[in-house]
Image (cartoon, rainbow, N blue to C red; front, side, top):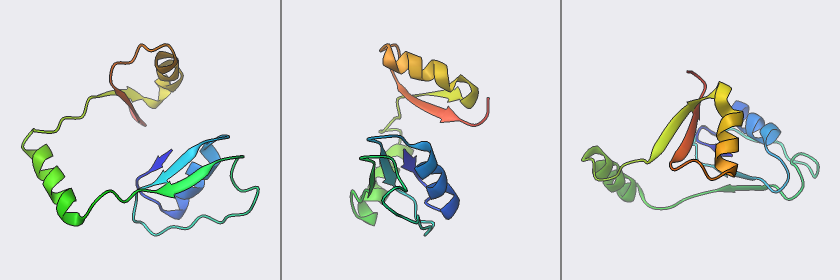
Length: 104
């Protein structure tokens, strides 16, 4: 689960949606908090963040993307098709990264 917002609501949703041995990756800066206790997350669930570079690095990557030198290899699917998407992933039928959107 990747939380790109990290508000109280999205952190709560992430913790409720994951299962055993899941990873919750925190990328957002909304400043939310997640109450924690021994039974708050499923067994062996990992909660972590990722800091991959400086703001200058981010500006350079965004500039490359704006120039068309970085392209995302994705395929969008509506939320209603999520079970079919999971089946496609399991069966090795998806050639791109799946992006699930709440709209059609």
